[in-house]
Image (cartoon, rainbow, N blue to C red; front, top):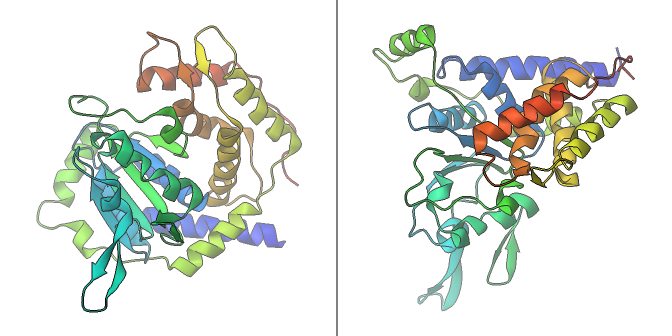
Length: 322
């Protein structure tokens, strides 16, 4: 068995281990958890968009606790300042010098709760950290954390007192996911699980940061056949055409799809990407990067539009292994 196949096998074991740990706290939502883990391995960030009470914050905390990583949370409000996120230099009278007081971005996993409640200026405070993996304070650059993974949440229904994320900020998120409400069986399972205990408090870490770094390297070695690459380009090009399209997917979006496809296949125990991986990822990775014309609707409509677009593009049928 080659190195790539060994790495893929390790990816399946790693994925099953973390997802099993998450299931001790979160009932159902296996695909959402898998996509969240995919984005983490692909070195991206995630926007969790759903109504309150669906478990967005708990899922973020559960993933962080499953990995022995530093975790921080920011509650976004209209009066939050950029320095409240990044930190600032404070003058120490005793030492007669400025001391850096680090903000919550100096962590590994950052939960940006209700990000659309902060002003655009404060939202922009995260831009450099998310894209460049660095924080600039008074002209000095610092590394926020390695790895650095942002999970932002927002409520798409309640818009009073909110500031919609601009396209430039939306494009910084590798995926936009939705938890969705549980079905009847899941609702009963939640009541049973939380009847006499808090599972999150008892959860233990199952992955070290060093293992995560190795997994990222192995995921990067997953093979992507030329015909799968062409399939990806067909989808992306299709998002740039049509009367209702204001803005299609950028090359950055296509590269995000590539990295996610490798990580997704790796977690499935394969050392090659298939068209089914691309189909599974097209909506969460690409839909939020498309700007539809006036009157075309919001998040749900963009998802449906993307699903329809992908279903109309011919799927390659070649052998995809290297």
